[in-house]
Length: 338
Image (cartoon, rainbow, N blue to C red; front, side, top):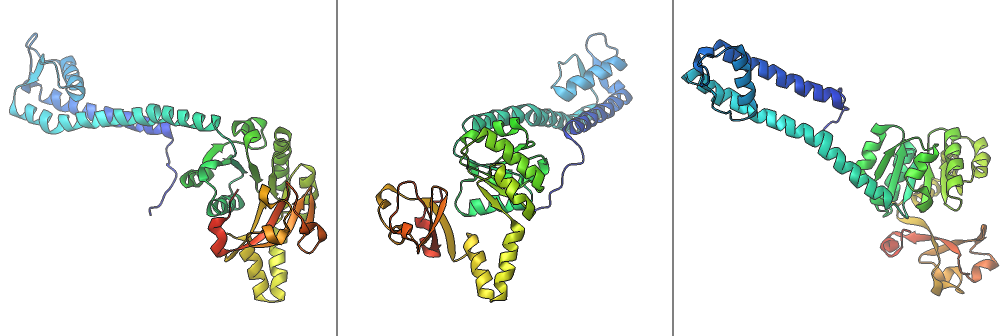
């Protein structure tokens, strides 16, 4: 593992440095050839002037020469062989590298991104890649989500580097803007997670997203308790308050360390048990919650209503029901992550 730091020069400044370096090397060669001009011979007029030196330098530094001006002394020939030839190769590498970096690589990358963007479907959009957004993506990947099916939106380009390293698609944009959400084909997404760092920004993103995708499941992280109601009013399907969750853990720890540890265990994919929500299969219709659950059935979500395992509604599942179950670690591979 090596340290990484953003380059102090932008791309065009890097090109300028390369061009400057090439000019310095050319001036060095011209200076030597002018000083050793008696070691050169012009086969056209027999006289080597300053223009002939410039001409010979440019030709010998970029090609193998035409033979009209040639070195005739040992010193001039050794200089061309030992100094000019490596510099010629160096020039070719600089030109080829610059062409690849600024033309071929960019063109190919844009082509791939447009192709991926056009084919986006059933993906997860994560708006905001700060601390919460990073943990969200990490947890999704740990739960088995395909990183190629995750699209991260953030205005900070440096924040997107880690998302790209994970294999996620990333776009530097303001998620409050309609064109940014259209660019990630929000209407074709499976779900959206919003954690912009500011409640007002997160709610505005939610409003814009709900307008573009009326039926999309949207989860939003809200820091202030007073903003939970506006978040729901903005169209959020789920409102998560990290402060409230931390309060639950702290309150649970009063009754014993085991309770808070178990709550955290349920919430994380790295624990021994996992809370899992899924739509029931067709063959499970008519069964009870206990019979259908892979692990331990806890709750049924039916038409916006929550039904506990102890209630009468849990005795018979209906088409379209979603069930929430607690799954032990050894059953994780058998459970769909969708």
